[in-house]
Image (cartoon, rainbow, N blue to C red; front, top):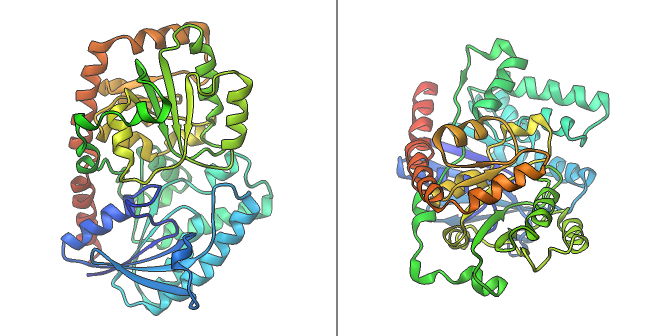
Length: 405
């Protein structure tokens, strides 16, 4: 089968960012399918005289369009990039031959080219929901215009109704979709969570265990790793607040924050203001996906945070899945399906959205419980293997393919 994979932010392991699409695409190749990827890039090496540049990578045909994009862009400038990709990718998609389109959000507009491909060429499509738009962008205040909000809901409904299969990345996302669109219930809605790439995150060696020490200048007793975007929804000010409270009580707890984003400078300024920077909080630049496992191997716990907005609890962040793939406990600060799993499977720690003196003391006690953390290491890896491996995701997708054709 010829699959056209549409993802605006497709990343290779040599780049910084999530590699779900890359890992799935390679798996589809192994299953005997032909894969063509349509994506955008900010990398100047793909900029050419032509609008699109096609490369071949490990059997994947990748069509790149150069559209500079960073997390520093405001929402209006991001909208301009989304619109440019919408029009360009629609034309590209219509020029390609395929049996199936797999469109993965965000943004929601990624579904428009797939819609056009279906209407014009009768090509069925799967719509993969990484964030429930427009619900999330409305909740965080990114979109306020009532007419625009109404248009987004109409577009969301249109995409869902025309998709052969909807693939939300969490059970909470599925609940959101089915509660707002009850008539979709008979349609195939298959939850396929993000991937824990076990092989990638277990391919580290004890003899190499000096990276964190080299980066921050010493070997901490207990290290908390955050590797991701410094954006509005991530709320990393929470970490700075946590660090300021734990510094005087236990300075041996260290927070290592890796990544970039629109709010990074603001967060660094807050760390300076609270007197924690380069004491128990250390900021590092983004690293590639292939470099990231060593950081997880050396840290004591991985982490994922969001600002206190209920609609964000349904997230399926790479940070959660990378952490447990590395066999480490996961630290979060919100409710939802991840909290339920952490508590049920004993694979991490859940902090409250608002920190109190008692919650800080309880967390400090947790960091000293070596027996519990060792058990959580084992539980995390086993749970990742049983539930979120690439092979499990591919098996679910293969069943979907068989239902469509």
